[in-house]
Amino acid sequence: MSEQPKKKYVHKKYTYRGISLEELLDKSPTELMELFNCRQRRRLSRGLNHKVKKFISKLRKAKTNAPYGEKPQVVKTHLRNQIVMPEMVGSVAGVYNGKVFN
Image (cartoon, rainbow, N blue to C red; front, side, top):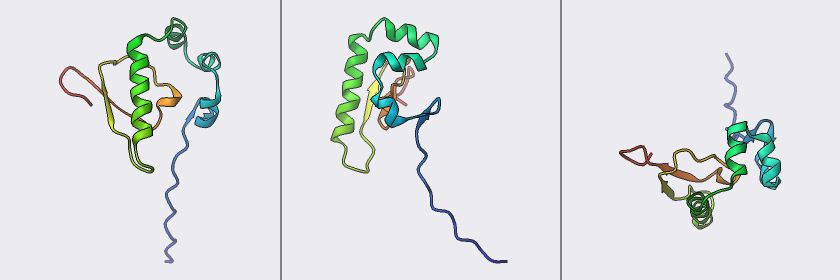
């Protein structure tokens, strides 16, 4: 039997409901809300509070400070019900479960 060479690993592209990550990042918040379910649309229509904005800014800062090709630092949070927005993809969040940050 002849052995075939192994296929090279190809990184999986991020998509949400068939839309690629690059397209999601280009969309405005109102266009993003149309893609979400009712509960997420309701929460986003009421606005983001100070804690959520601070968390997102920490994620951005950790992502920009990370060297190319490396994972960013873990950002710890107690926000268990946070909706994952497209700009959060690629960041690492440690969510407190009552005992430890996972």
